[in-house]
Amino acid sequence: MAGGYRYHCGECDHRTAWLTESQGEEQHLQHYLSRHSGILPGGWKESAPPRTGGGAGGCLGVLGGVFLILVLASTCEAGAAVPPAGGSSVSLTVEHRLDLLR
Ligand SMILES: [Zn+2]
Image (cartoon, rainbow, N blue to C red; front, side, top):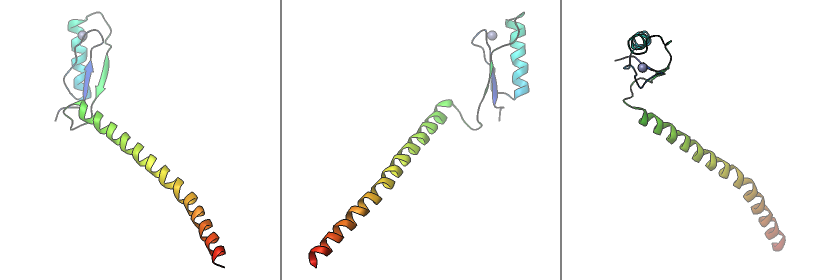
């Protein structure tokens, strides 16, 4: 498997292939030497998680996880708020009925 880094040129749209950090750095410097001689190498380094073919799948997975957490959080809030209030009103009703029966 190829490495998890690629380097983007800061001066043009060039970027290296996915390489190891040292290989990418070398190609990045070579690009600057041949295309932008006289300019200090800039741009940025992109790191990728292993085993992914593209970025879209990982992004959707994160969004799905956030959505699930939000749904679970709202469900827990609703579940925690209802029982105490409902429980006290039910017991009051039972006491009233016991008084009526006496
Ligand atoms: Zn360039």
